[in-house]
Image (cartoon, rainbow, N blue to C red):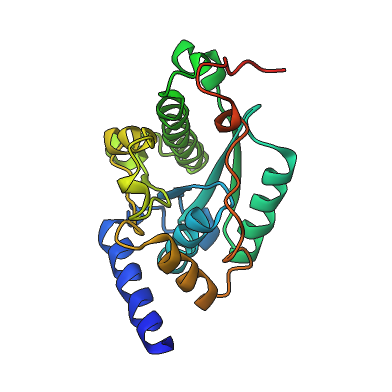
Length: 224
């Protein structure tokens, strides 16, 4: 069993390495921790995104980060769990405020809220990564970064079971932003098995949907 899991992990790491972003050229005077973040994981603290984050961190230990969207849909408990897991993995966690609640399609809660939420999240991830890279360039006296250099590779924890669920319209947003899904060939149980093998503390944690998804269809997702 462990041999099979080890082989599975190697395959997953190879997928991440093949799709991930290497660091662009940095000044020779730059210190190791000055490297720009080029690989960003959409993070919730759940087992799927945690496994994706652990894989990305192993392949790109100095140029990766996790990012969680902070909004009224994220509970304090979920946020703390995400912080704890990210710390266990050893991955910086960006806590970014997102504005999906300003979008009519999200608030309407007519079956497409996840699409608007993920669209907002992925756009925010791109913006934050670009901002940090620009700041680093300016600090080193080089403000000529290309658009391609500023664009990170985004990852999520989508698994094979998720892709069979027609209600997961957030997958459409992921496709539009060219998000990499390293776990797309693993079932949920396989994700848990690999997460346990790698020692992730939340490998068997129950699913914890966002607060908005607990509303009945058609009940507006207004902030209270």
